[in-house]
Image (cartoon, rainbow, N blue to C red):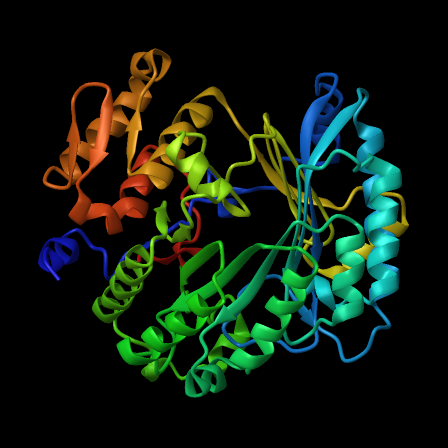
Length: 450
């Protein structure tokens, strides 16, 4: 690969930076944002404001070693029904906070393992949400599906409630790699679930794959990509594995000496990128790929692409309401995150108290910088508005980037563009917009830049 030495010189292989699914990143959140603050944000929402709903189901039958998400294992169904009831209780209280009517446009169930819920519990959850919010006019209902923990009854129930898109976690099909990350899932099992979904006329399928896994090579990754492409997904998210055992203790079970070196990670990503582009997929931002006729690709072409805690999206709703333990909500005024520990979350909800734990209130400068970061993360370029150009603090950040990455970016006075060879540096470049932040968070919570 060309420019490896340039990328190394800019710190790509040893830097740790935010993933920038929000600006500021979630590890800047504080307890300064509380229930009272969020109630104010809700009460000022205009009539018929469009909202999206996210429900976090944190439970899993098994805890995959590679995962750093907020999850917990359960060997039985005992905690599931009470959790669903608590989510519905939170949903009612949240809906009551909006003094005007709102229009839910999207619903996403994530986790954890949403499909750990039985068909009856899925019915209870989705019927309850419909009673509370009114979901008849949804544009999209998507669910994260674990092929190892789902069945025809659960899929049929999801379809009954309007399932239109399914996201399947795959990671890697190589048995040696699967054993090393604690997730054994055969191609045959995955293909069977894909067939069941398509039989239900759910044709919008997202696959999640990982690069940078232990024992992963060009050969094994190529085989995984070929197997995945046989099932013709409409989107593929190709995430870099983030090895953070100080944050996620289960990752200490992964043999760190078997992880590819940073330069090899870049080679693996580039191999996958070229493979997917060669099969007609369009690269979306830093790690997503979509068929040209997929809504995400259309949003990319039309410059409507955005980025949120759910990754790249064409969702333009200004309100994303997160329900459940650790769920994050997005408001025009800022972010709010629920308590991550399910026991503490349950205690607050059962006591008729808000489970909000922390958040971040956006100021004018945050809004201006957030727009720059989002454009960079979506398009590897950012065109500044007159308001942004007139703000000396924003302009100082841009000039700081130009000075620090002089050979990797161009600046014509209104548009900052990243050179094609320097696209892997985008998170580092976006991170340079925070140069004036005086209270930097613990860098251990950041992930590798590639």
